[in-house]
Image (cartoon, rainbow, N blue to C red; front, side, top):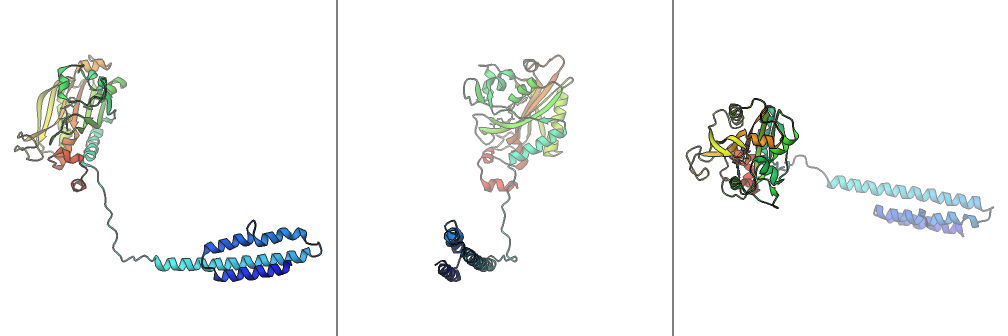
Length: 340
Ligand code: FA5
């Protein structure tokens, strides 16, 4: 009889609900009672086999049981949820009197710090910041810089070749030719980036960073270059920094100079870092060789240029008093922590 069956279902489910201890079991009961094949669902489906006279009465009883069980399930659910919440509140109390956890703050790497400082100074002087590829064609790194294949001046830079025509750029000067090809004078650009040479000692690293600067305009002179570099160096290192300009040679500039700054380790007395000279070479510079301008399609009769190439690792060494360049690449937190 359906009526007896209904009574049994109500009795069993209410008894089961009384013993239930978790939400998962409640959900299982819900499926068993009201799911697709649940006991109440099946009874409702069976209504079609009941005689039309009895149907309203049985229908009302099934509905009554549905309301009763839904109500009981919801009540039990609420009780269990309250219990879970009470337990959470009791166990997850935050003691606001406890001291906070120490958060370890990072800092800019000394080289990135130098790149930021130098590019800031240059942007203030009207330069645009550009980038170029680290894997470069021999053409841009050497040939367009007036250093033909097999020329002895290639020995000045011990280069990592990938193929005969492709290399890891040995100088950011490679960006000069790319920019001269794509821009119309007048323009002022700086290009910071990684460079590579087969070198390693206290002041030479196989990976290092340079920042190239290039100005192309109608009346550019060595006096402009020297005064601009002096202002730049004094802004970077301080007004009373000792700076030395020396004549030098680069195939892409004529005349050429090199610029030294007092050694960070011995402050001019002479030590192993500066190989006894008291000074550290920081950059090369000069008036752009007219041949280089012409090769990149710039009229050398109308326009002149000056260029400079900073060693950024050496700049970081001077700014932060670092005596061995290799420390910049060891990723030793104890070393890097000093520059926070
Ligand atoms: C050049 O690379 C030229 N392209 C610079 C230049 C640009 C001259 C524009 C004229 C016009 P040089 O080889 O001297 O020049 O390198 C420039 C600077 O890079 C050096 O003064 C030094 O500070 C740095 N440098 C060179 N080799 C290394 C190295 N292996 N490790 C760290 N710094 C280096």
